[in-house]
Structures are given as structure tokens and as C-alpha cells.
Amino acid sequence: VGVVRDTKYGSLGEEWLPVVFLPLAQNHETGTMLYVRASVAPSSLISGIRREIQALEPNLPVPNIQTMTETIGTSLYAARMGAWLLGVFGLLALLLAAVGIYGVLAFSISRRTREMGIRLALGADARDVFLLVVRDGMLLVGAGIVVGLGGGFAGARSLASFLYGVSTSDVSTF
Image (cartoon, rainbow, N blue to C red; front, side, top):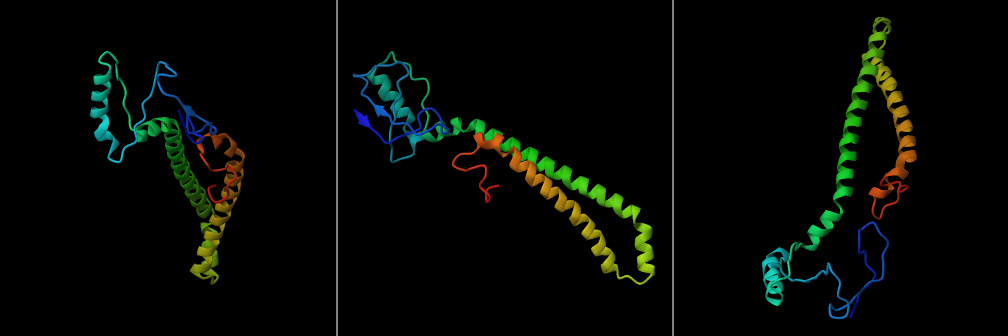
């Protein structure tokens, strides 16, 4: 009988559970798994393990031998795909926001072209006119940041299933 520390048996998202491994002679079940600890690259042992299992029981099918890295990678596929899609959609949203800010600023500047010309004609520095445009742009960006952070905090609970070991209210991660 092998007693091990608490472990996650089904998926990485589940709670830690106490586990007891029993010898096959004491608890015969279908779907038995064999875990092999190795000090060399695990993938180099796969053919030898398959050969030894076939030597013990020639009629036993050995359909799937995986390294632990492959098994963990498979269990994290949905989370990784979700994170990748969220990243792609986030970049798309960033691109759309940049195009939107550019469009609003271009429209605002085109409406104020005469005003800027009059300011320059009355002696204003080009730097002052530039700061006027930048101030208007930063007001838009600031409003967007406030609205975006508020929406992000409101929607963070729906993303909790994608996070492992991180809270949705963790400020540095957010």
C-alpha cells in the first residue's frame, strides 16, 4: 500500500484530496494506471515500458503511454485555449480602442482647426496648441481607463475558472 500526500487526481482545478494507491492484487480495477518515476528523459522509456508490460501479459492492450508533462498539458488545454482566445480578443479590443481614439481625436482636431489657427495668429506657441490637443486626448484616454477598469472588475468573476492560484481581485495581476 502506498500512501501519498494529498493530490489532485482528476484535474488541476479541483481541491487537494487524500489518495491511497493499492497494489493491483488487492484492488483490481479496469483502467489501471502505471506510474514510473525516472531519472532520465521519460519519453526514452516508453518503448521499454511497453515491452515489459507485453512480456508480463501478452494479451493486455497498452493503448496510451504518456509522460506526466503530456498529461498535464492535456488537462490544461482548455485553460490555455481560453487564455489564448482572451489574449487575441484583448489585442483586437486594444486595436479597436486605438483606432477609435485616433478617429475621435482626428475629428476633434478637424473641428478646432480654425480655433488653432486663430490662437497661432494671436501669438500662441505651437507647443501650447500641441498641449491643448494632447490634453483633450488624455481626457479621452483617462475616461476610457476608468470605464475599462470598472468593467474589468465587474467581469472578473466570470474569468475565475481560468485562474489557478491567483485571485480575481489581485491588484498586481489585474
